[in-house]
Length: 279
Image (tube, rainbow, N blue to C red; front, top):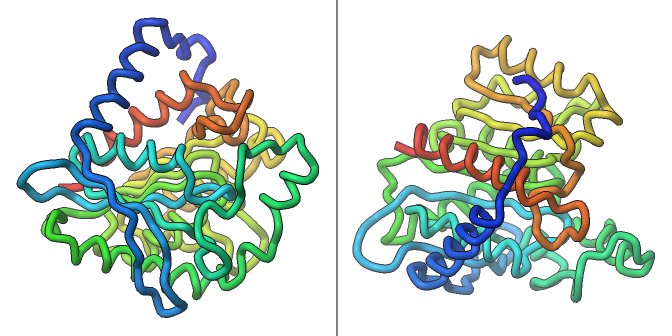
């Protein structure tokens, strides 16, 4: 649980080439479909990915960041499916608008673009009960797919605002979710009685929470609150600050904040956790 050293991040040109080859392999070996998922609140547009050929695989639900469903998250879904999973990436803002909710690049330095991205109207219906209803619907959809191996535990991962949604999913479906991962999750610890960290006692999944260095600087005690909550609940969990990686570092279209070496480190931890737990 110690901070990740900058020296650990040394992605070479050869490793970068290997990553490109991995993405090309995923493109060739994965089926991708645009689907609609019926929820109690409407019809959610989403992307579904699974390996080509016969077989069944564990299910994974990906919660996006505040930019929503877009090409970079399709790439994640495709890459994960190539590793042997049935992956659903829903548009979390389906109550308001079909994806993409924001057109063009996610430029937080552009006031106009930032206002569109951060518009609170996009989150209509995304209160705690709404997210719980969505999580149940999404896992139900995944389990209804003939490619899904329902005898194996499912996983869930989330980025930025998706971090709290991962915690809610793991808590609302404790017997289904075996592995849960948050990357630069925002608001995992709050003073509200609905704070995501208060859901930890309800979880049964192994949890990995990768924390951005600048998020840790702003709220230096949050990681300790999380660690204590997991320890008090007897849960298997890792809360790790990624030194040198700032909020958004795992999402490739986040411009200069994207840190490929840090992103690959988090991806390796994620896939190792799934291999241990989605059995």
